[in-house]
Length: 212
Image 1 (tube, rainbow, N blue to C red):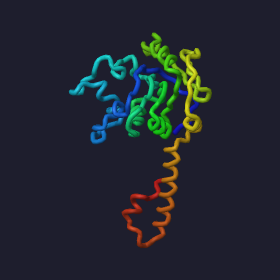
Image 2: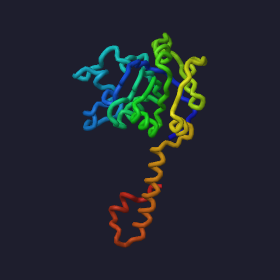
Image 3: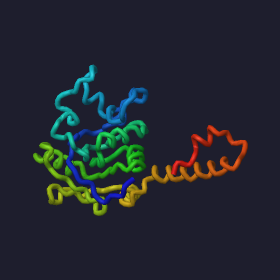
Image 4: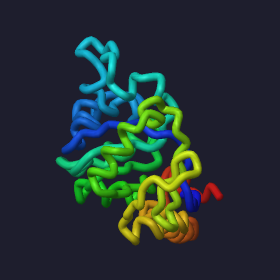
């Protein structure tokens, strides 16, 4: 991941409590082709025939370029599917501001570099109904280092973030990245060993060959 100290963009308000991972990524999409973002809020934003439901925020052109989601309490509750995080990221979201998060969802988000930031619900609710937020015109700046949300250059909210997740975003060193590096190190060692063995099947060497 690329290290970043701030997230700048526009917000989409979805001030609902208990948004669960099945709403974020319905289970049936596990077996369907396509990007993860096609599943995001599928049952909330589309009718059974696939046509968009008017009024749902992701169907609203005001929020077409939103990369910050404003939510309520217990966002990401329910099952432990990482696909919910991937769907949000594929749809362009870099940060979620909510009063609280499902514990497993927050852990998955930290692994993948999706910023989960918290603030008191009353403060979030006041932010979500501001005319410039609902109009999709407010320019937001989240300072990851200080935990400050600025809107159009003015302080708006003090945000909290789990420190390990904050550090990972600031350093650009996500747990997923570390796991990939460990796997790559193991692959190189295995490839080096197989490369020195006359008996090593050539098809294994082709699959696990060094592509650096």
